[in-house]
Image 1 (cartoon, helix red, strand yellow):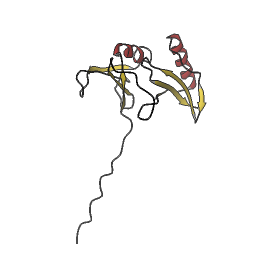
Image 2 (cartoon, one colour):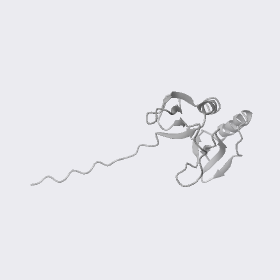
Image 3 (tube, helix red, strand yellow):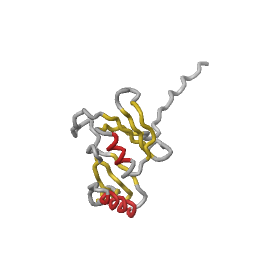
Image 4 (cartoon, helix red, strand yellow):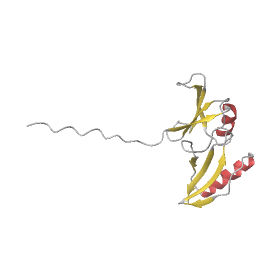
Amino acid sequence: MSTPPAEPRRMQLTGLHHVTLVSGDLSRTTAFYRDVLGLTLLREGANDDDPGARHFWFGDANGTPGTLVSFLEYAAMPEGSVGRGSTHHLAFGVGSAEEQDAWRDWLTSKGVPSTEAMTRGGLRSVYLRDPDGHVLEITVAA
């Protein structure tokens, strides 16, 4: 009797590990993501794929996958354009509408413009832009 063929290994993604964005000035990016948004600067160094580019990693204090945002610095690169293949926005979650309101107040105190909270699709969202123009969302379940 022949042995039936083995089932192929089922591949499974376990979630989002990190997102990498392009920055024009990592000092300015650090001042925003660390000092305004409160993320931890976990690593700074050269990019493994492009040693001429600086590469900074931010996230929670433990570097937990899913909290990680990294930036490659390309000061001379032209501004990006919105369209297919571009990123629309990054969404950061908070625990309550009250915390979201506190974030909005904090951003205002730091001179960072943001939208009023808007509710749609089961989420309550506030939008803002980082120093390079990336759209960020602070969101909570509505």
